[in-house]
Image (cartoon, rainbow, N blue to C red; front, side, top):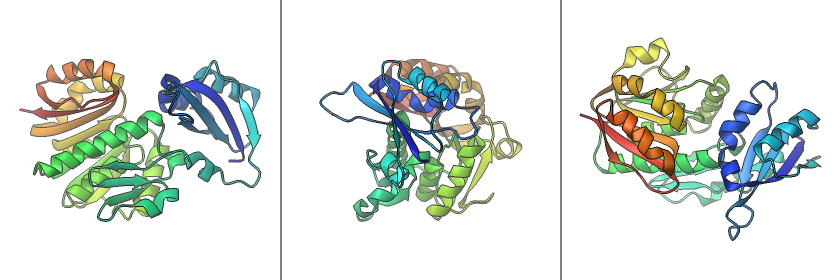
Length: 296
């Protein structure tokens, strides 16, 4: 990754980077790493989008970036011998949610005493929205443990980095945990993160099983149903369409954590699951919502 393209964008455009960027560059053999940051907290709607490329970006690639941030003018820089990973991670602060502390390699010296810490390579881990929703999901898991909840059969759908599955295993170390993602590259990243964080990977209790699958569409996932905890940090649209399948896969009395949705989308997602017989026990707050539901 020796080329960097930066351009101004709005906060809303920055929040859409992980979804829209993946779609735009889906056919590229070497898609760029996309990172968004907020240069000036006093100008909350002025953000910067950064794209890191292996090779000098083509005109077509610059045009795709302009679709992500139409009002920004691409600024191209050759990084030469600079460490692009360090640069891409420089603006990403650690997540501190309950007992959990998620950090990039640049923040190893900030781990609080007694925290459950995970190290994640930010270049493969977080877009802007993902960072916020991951924090909310970790906080929800932490609260469930504090409430004395116990889970033995857990699934994390759309796992991405594997982080939420790892956190669940730390809280309930005897559980059987499966983490799936439709993107095989995400599962490769999750495998790397599992190794880095010494998370045991296998099809057994006390381990995380990592699978490439769309939603619940894998025989090993079907064979493990019903789940007493289902986590899905994806997007509002897929959450609504998956509601019947997710509800059917959840055990009676089970808990569901749903995220990846904005405040304006929370009621629509909640209604889809209430129609399937679940009850919302926590709607969360803030711009990025985390819904916690139970099946009666």
